[in-house]
Image 1: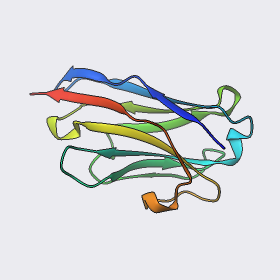
Image 2: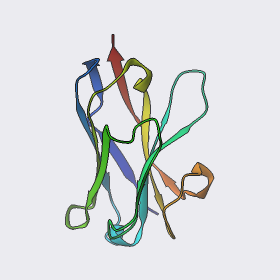
Image 3: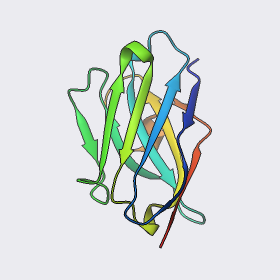
Image 4: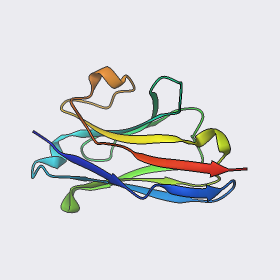
Length: 123
């Protein structure tokens, strides 16, 4: 059972930056592909970015490509999401998730989820 804990959310003005972190309890963290998703109020959960176990395969949603960067540090059991040039439409609860096989954009593919961290971007 992998436990994931997100941190780093908060309130930021449009154009600003935030860095989200997701710490995993599992010592075998390095075998999991990791993803970031977000869910705005009244909307469905949306794919943001994903990274393979070794960082060699990275995928971004079109809406964040060029602004967000996903990375991981397997020695620290942590995955990051650097968010730059934030927009009000990025406002959502952000979740990290772990997947035992490969990078995926469908949230149904993921096996473990964190509790989420709120990101609010003011205009």
